[in-house]
Image (cartoon, rainbow, N blue to C red; front, side, top):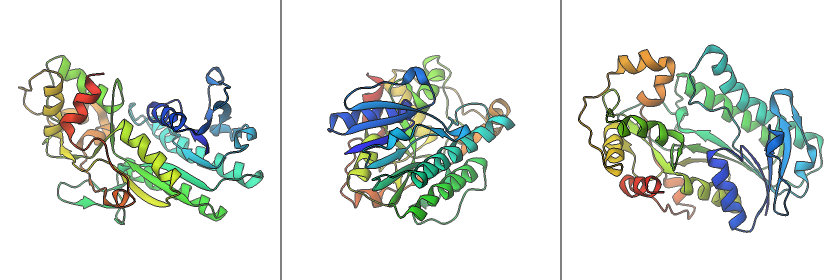
Amino acid sequence: MNLLITGATGLVGTELVQQCLENGHTVHYLTTNRSKLVTKDTYKGFYWNPAKAEIDTACLHGVDAIINLAGASISKRWSRSYKREILQSRIDSIQTLHKLLCDNKHQIKHICSASALGIYPSSLTQKYDEFETNVSTGFLGQVVKAWEDEADTFNTLNIPLSKIRIGIVLATGGGALKEMARPIKQGIGAAIGSGKQWQSWIHLKDLARLFLHVVENKLDGIYNAVASNPVSNAELTKALAKSLGKSIFLPNVPEFAIKLVLGEMAAITLESQYLLNDKIKATGFEFEFEQIDETLLDVISK
């Protein structure tokens, strides 16, 4: 299969590209950085600039499916201007791809677009499957809702569309885990707020495998991309400390202190979403990493 991937040089994209190539697929990827353009037999880069609706139309040649991972990181302080970038980067990327398909001949049979768990309202008691209709009223919820609504425009092209609601990605040397590990390594780690908020997580390898599973099997619809055993913030903090050979002895960091330091961005650590993954498992997908302890040992040991 020939795949076109956006966000291919990021944390998730890098792992996904590697797995694609290992499974015999050919990858075309889009990048805003001309220095990252590479041309090989099975891996070829093309320039685009979604903010200006610019894209090299040659990226479509021979491509069967698109995996869209593009979007500015949410792990950067949310100034008013950066909040606009978080949202607009996601909208611009989809609009640029949509116009590409409208204006050019292609053989695209499937589109798979990233989404996020932030669409679900924060709750300590609710467990969310993909049929949940309530949407978080917070900034992240509204961003993801707009992101998914924009992805739905692909439906006008009669191309099967899947949306992958990604949980907290646990990976070696990057993502949320790197930030969580830093204070623990310094001996000042502690649970956040009440520590009771649910953290729905997934190993990076499983996430990349899940994207491939969806595309290879042409699955449409919405899928939660999380392992089967979410943990509380307190449990995740203790498990991470254990994997690092450290102890947690400080009291929880008060909610007001986190908000004082991070501002509105504190929602990333304080919101609680317990996601269910029965829908993706019913398609035959099997997670390699289901328990938090074994997952952390795998990513920390590398």
